[in-house]
Image (tube, rainbow, N blue to C red; front, side, top):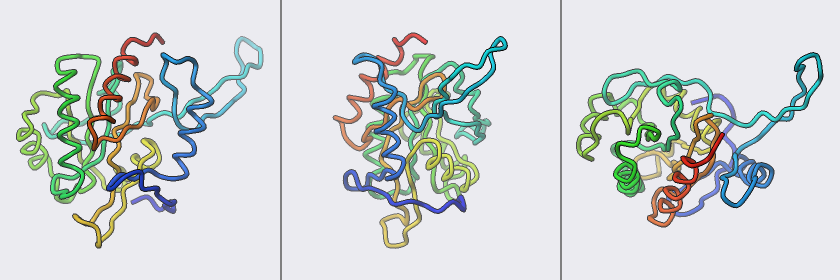
Length: 227
């Protein structure tokens, strides 16, 4: 795991955890970047920078974005940020042996998969937080058990440090090992909606039908949104 000190976590509901300091950034980002009732906010911290354009100093806003990454999917393929180029996607974090919220999450994510199946502008990206157990073969078996075919819903594994790091620093959710917790890990039940520019546009409770209904409604809005 990243050596960066983990900040406090806030229990939003049983089994649903969001990084407290980053949650504040989400709220502030929502206030700062909301541009109308029909347009989703850009979440996370933003920076105001000055740069030289055509010989003139101009002010520009740099929004929080998902950085470069490299993982391996259930199909054995390398998955990078380029795999999701020009697509919106939903990300989450889970592990195949999770006895608590993961079954609920995967039931709800399957609803999203079925709703947008075949839409080439939409992908789903599920990161295992137990890469020691969740090998490519295990993830393939898990995906097959859900009836997932092709590359629209990818289950990815890789370096544990990198997975935890991108979860906390980029997707704004937290997972932490806890021997006293069922399965040995406490982690977020969040589904994170990301746009084509890799900006986070929404965070939803992936354990509930209500939360995922809102996600799918917002996905429709995002697909209709002009750059």
